[in-house]
Length: 280
Image 1 (tube, rainbow, N blue to C red):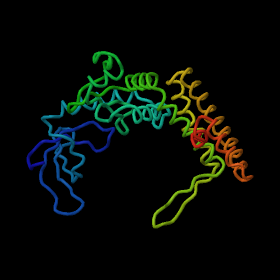
Image 2: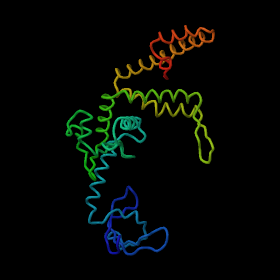
Image 3: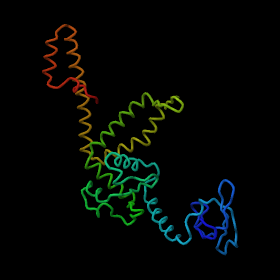
Image 4: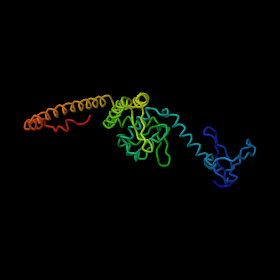
């Protein structure tokens, strides 16, 4: 910003933009700029202000206001902060969508930033025009910004078309929640120290944040996919039980000196015992 230039000034985020002229730059720290307020209502007022309050050259204020209006609609239409629905969408995007194609911006009220619309349309099995059907969508710096309604539709479609990776994540998170509800969570802090989070806190956190997210993910994947995955988990548990029984029998036969019988039993199983004892 140069002396004599007119800039759009805003003291707080809720204040309107007003025109000021840069009078001179300060020489001390923190940086300050002396500005003169242009509108007659300020009666030639001058003030030392932080440079960050000068948002854009006054000649560009129209475009700046239009951008703020576009983003204002995005924020107004998005889910509430820390919403489990947004967390669920983030989970789906992380598991199933390459960031080079699209991503969820941090603190962007659930808006999707789409870099490769054609690739995203191919993944969703729709036309590019069908991906973003919303009056509040807009392009910025070569990226298409789509509001929460579009994000949720994309996340639901991705989860429904490829539920396996999502249900695996849900199952892993449920196992973690169950373990931490009993033992809490220990972690390594700074300088080699360790910390511990008590079970009661983690139970409350899971009930308020993570469990609702998992419920949404199950719903997006569909009842059939969720049921099939639950059956698969139960089958894995049973396979592990059978594997343990088989291994115990083989070990006892070998301990009793019946090596031939133990080897025959292992062969007749038809599947390596190590596979039967696969992790849940």
